[in-house]
Length: 168
Image 1 (cartoon, one colour):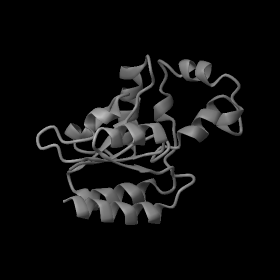
Image 2: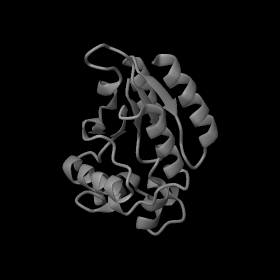
Image 3: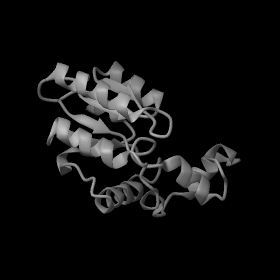
């Protein structure tokens, strides 16, 4: 079993950085969000995002809980896969959050990693997007919704401890 963390919304404060990039107080104030996302293509945007105040505690907890069986499963921008994945990796390195390389996944189809390919055991994904969680669960994985700027880190850690130990 692997325990994967999403980046944007879970350990990287994408929403504040997105708003700041376009001179807005809140990302929902950006008039044409799709156009704004396209404008991020080919840039180092993902290396400019700040971690959440809870990031180090969450990552340290996950590392202690799962050992080498933790990773990152994050979506790159559509149409900018290689560039945005590169800058996400640089961000992880800069913030000393690199998982074992074999557990570093950048894909728009996270659900392909919901179970272990060898034994079918469910993997865990912590993600802020309900759609990602739903697809992960539908493919046999264990999905836990968590958005760092809204949800309790303590509740997440309690849930992870129960789920991880129960499944191992």
